[in-house]
Image (cartoon, rainbow, N blue to C red; front, side, top):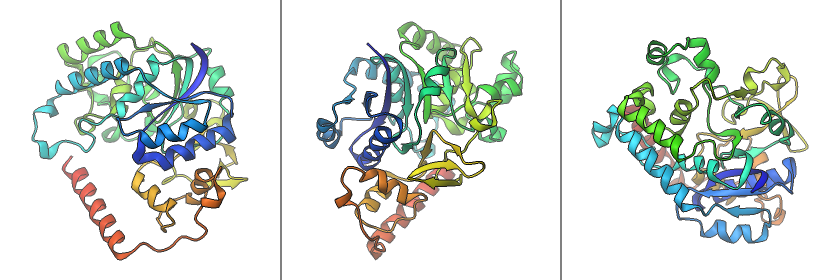
Length: 339
């Protein structure tokens, strides 16, 4: 058992993002904190080769844990009303493996922080570690501020089924792209108890229909109980804690390749490149001019240890590449509309 470590979830299709994240952790958090990569699937050949030169980085190999989480998630989502709908109306993440990030609770780190692989770490985690002395969970996101229709949890249903008010529920709503917690928090007995409530008591219906199969939605349900203490930096009484973190939505200032919140130059924990695909970053790293906000910062960290391989000039994509990207985006938009 190790006192503290970092987890992420990745496979070879997000290799470039993973390398950038690992480099940002080494530079901005600490080169000495152990990092464990949970495999999204079995496509990890590039990752296995990459970590040979990174003594503090390992690959999570507890497949019993991964299978346990797979089984739990499949069983509870199969109980959701949406599971009986047509294949055509199922969301894009149906039968995906994003939930495998929860295997972090079964790992070797007594306390840990999880980063999505499509992130760059921007500052040390000392304060998060200190918060974990007091809280079961630590978050840093703005999910609680979303309108009712966009929250993972159906607030009206949960209000009517519990003693929670909407403000109390919003205090407990969070994302799962970045969080801190403790080893062993969701053991076998806990998952069995959750399964009974979700399936037999039909509390799976507390999750909004359009967020079916969302790992974030399930995590929100799992942490709703007030016995789980949590801290969210965006709800902190200290205004310095409240920052943005999304590449496609927030404005940042670059100082020596470390990003700060534009309003007040407040340090951020990470920048999250949500809604950009792994193929977008792969194309960018090959020198293609891909429209990604804060792409210069990404390229800096991706090639931090290999500056000679960094593209010196970005070239416009070919007609074929543009067409393929347009088709992919159109298909994604159609799927989102159907979902």
